[in-house]
Image (cartoon, rainbow, N blue to C red):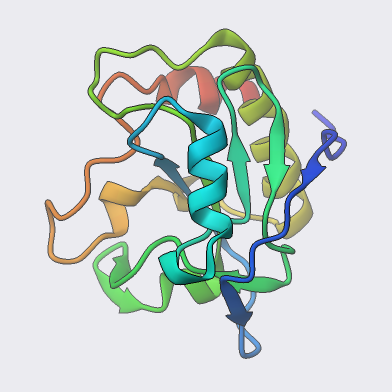
Length: 163
């Protein structure tokens, strides 16, 4: 299908730098490790935190854009893609989902609908291959360093929604 960019609330973070010529070919999904969207947003906008993402999808489905797609957000840390060391931040769009990551707290229906629209748009816009839509746990080094998105994240619903 065709995806339009969903409405976003601009909430700029100072925590980014240049991509240094790298093309976007990956989308990395995260959970924020809390269910407090306002707190998570404040953390990613605080220069002292030195973390950010391009987007944050709150539990009510609102999408916040913290970093312009063309810039390098600080969401993935040390990583590799498909077993090859790389600057994951330099080549990816990071999306944070407000969720405590316990595996018990559901990702809301509104959140999943917004995520499908956003991911579908980004996949189409940057020609991201389906196998490069990954979780933080899939790219973090050393293996096991990260667990997001949580074990109860519905990958099948996401993939079916953007296919």
